[in-house]
Image (spheres, rainbow, N blue to C red):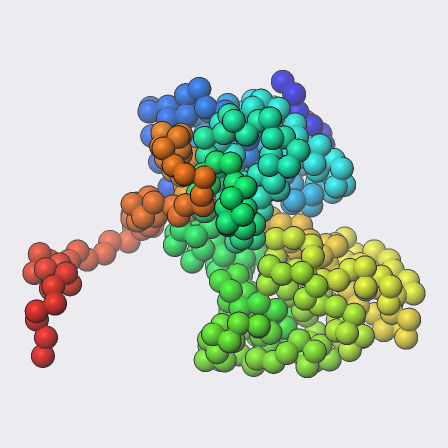
Length: 418
Ligand code: ADE
């Protein structure tokens, strides 16, 4: 079997971590049982470009149990858990192409290797796999019947492809399912971003000024958790509605330029490029800490930071200290890459359970229906979203009420009023 991972000797540790994560993924567990019986992916080849984590490993196992032939590559050069990559190869027979800390060349070589088996389905997180297929591997496009996309940034790229009519096969935007973004983006990113910053720095958040750039679902989660840890949170936004929500959620809202000299910790979660730039670095306090929780490492203008600096050194793992020309120190975490997956373990399994149940069920939907769909970006079918919410509630032991026939009729009519 072809593969490229750091060290197969790490497999026993990865196997235990995968089992531990699996315990918090009961919805995926029930899909594993269903897939084992029904084999919905018999004869289907899947290329997945996802963060190689213990949660992703459980998704790979589910797809394999369903009869799929799977290949996995990383969706970020710093997010791979090498022990998980090893156990997937050694114990589950999944060809994995991913090494934590790989350079850009290796990252793209691995994407190409994950495509070598000519997939029918693509599972992506950030759309690097789909973009590689559409630019450098066009000869493979004819085999594809569908794909899924995990994250906001990827969905934006794919919508742009669909709008320009260059998308060659249908993609389901897993990110936009309610059982995904309301939980993974908010509670997952919220907790794991704080976790990543704390593991990298070991700072005390209580009493610090934490500046969060971006108040989408991820930004809301980060702000909420930073506040919960005792930080004074400032939100920077460009969207007036989101800014207004942040104000009414009790946060201070101001332009980044004004927040720059106030902040102790800066976290970008905007999905856009060059959010923190030269103008901001030079206004920051000595000792400021900067981290990114958005998908790509473009939110912080690192070349500008380098230009402003006389010196840089690795002061702790995942912490680069830049000394600016005037002597002030600014600390960049994890080279500006996703902090939650670089210095921590990504979102907890309990939320990835729903995200990956959406991935698995969307992949199943595409394997049967993909050929009938147009070359567009589709939402996760509402039925799947609702089924996952019900399944998750059931596994949590939570029961809810049902509408009576009278209430159902009332909600669908217009004649009853004052
Ligand atoms: N994205 C964020 N957290 C993740 C995790 N734990 N596994 C896979 N993808 C993720």
